Length: 327
Image 1 (cartoon, rainbow, N blue to C red):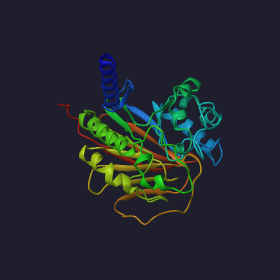
Image 2 (image 1 turned 90 degrees about the horizontal axis):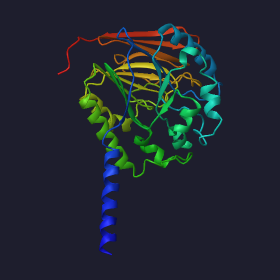
Image 3 (image 1 turned 90 degrees about the vertical axis):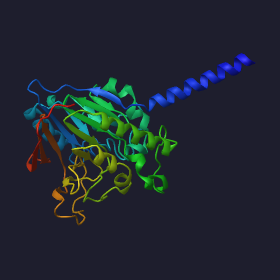
Image 4 (image 1 turned 45 degrees about the vertical axis):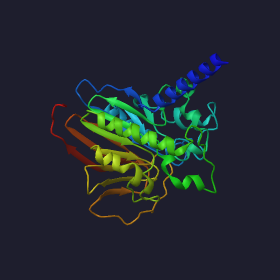
């Protein structure tokens, strides 16, 4: 009996250690920069509609820009499969909305992907499953993770669980498996994100989530993120926050920090003519149509370009940093 008790206590201690260590640090991926010391990537969100609502047309233009820039990877800002995520690992929507749409040779690079609220209405675990990576090796989707790209660190954040309204949404059912208990999940995620940002020695820090922190689109600012996520970003010198959710393209600058808010949610269906009044000093660009963004970045410079569904350039923004050695 005593031996059984000892074994049970040892098992519980081991289980506790495993649970604790699982939240100790976000999973990391290493992605090298080009030989010339630069990095290029595209940003697209809210796209998975089997090619409809101009998804295929956006994909064609993405391929052309990707070839011109010789991109290193693609960032997906979530809502990857409409309307209700995937039904499982064998759901044909994965190939019909992803593999068979983004076919350009220039887009056969890693796709670093976060989940959106529509993805949480389906089988979330399916999108996270390594089975999908066997179907299409480009696909990298986790709840939250870090990509270290030499002089840039990317922090991909699972924002849907932060939004209180989804817990009481009478019209939709969300799959919270892997998130409950929610407050523990969020507390650990906030802790891990802050730790990762604080320890980062990268020249640039970019955070990617599905929901907008600042937006003049249909959904507007996400107050839950303003309250729980934004203070962490401000305290740790984040340069860019990239998101989808609002089906538009926009650039908002922070008036009290260096953060630039970039919404790239025009991967397919756009709403059109939905614009909230916004501080004119903060609002740099807004377009209520389909399209995507490109980013070219070096240790000292960054350039953002916004394109519409026809590949026309709608907006450009550049910034520079002094180059100092990390201590």
